[in-house]
Image 1 (cartoon, rainbow, N blue to C red):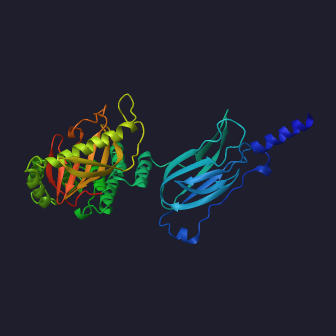
Image 2: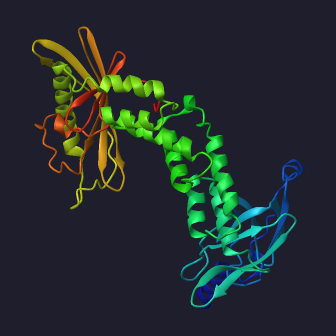
Length: 403
């Protein structure tokens, strides 16, 4: 019986980390001369861990942002040199073997450190019915707006700067946030229209929202208006663009598109029927895979293999091949895209069909082309046909806004 109690006591000592021989060691961060030489605006972070018998066997892992910079045992300490600016210091435990509940949690501390400054921190364990890591800064923290600007600077997106400017409109850093927004759009290279792609439109629209009177607001407004005209092509859309931007970046393409959309509804009935058959094929493939909540929202992402089928209309045999790629989620709709090709003797149609699976809760496979969303399109030779919500209309396939 005595031997059992001795074994139990030893086990408790080992797991709780009370004995010094089981204390975690401190691992100093390794910073070579070359790494230190790259620091343009040096600042110093000094980190120290208090001596505590609880959790002594567990090293504290220290992160600067996502970078692990060192590990601390009880009474351990080290210095870390870094660039001045936004600091997100995280301290967490490396393992969870200590005896006790809720062990251990992480602690996060944000600050903005100036060039040449030193920040000191003391970390430890609170023993109050549970054990939790904590950080105690040894100096005054930077103002809240300065820390928030540093957080935006760390993300370096127009959306992040826009959120900062909206929240801290009177901050001394607002002018710098505006300059950073301009810098983001300049570095994206999209001021040259030859570099415009679909993915760039998010940056354009974010800039327009953040800085409606900014340095590049006029450019962003023009690009956005032309983008919307191409996305939802109609005679009026291109007329409105040309009226507002008579000598705009997209004048030539707007005039060409205006000429095509002026033709009205496409008169190639064979093309329309092929698209209707392709749409029915999509619905048959998609229906078994959809999972919806009571609000007809997709509950999980679904993927689809590439499929092939043969069809015939009026004796003309053709092949439809394509795949359902993904659904897109925003505040108002859940959509799927079928990207494929219909080909036969003397013709080939490349198409992208878009469907809204919220407004079609039953997704009837016998529905005609009315199930397509605006944004569906068909390309053949140098022409492109768009679905305007009711009909296929003429458009012009050009280089802009392609993936």
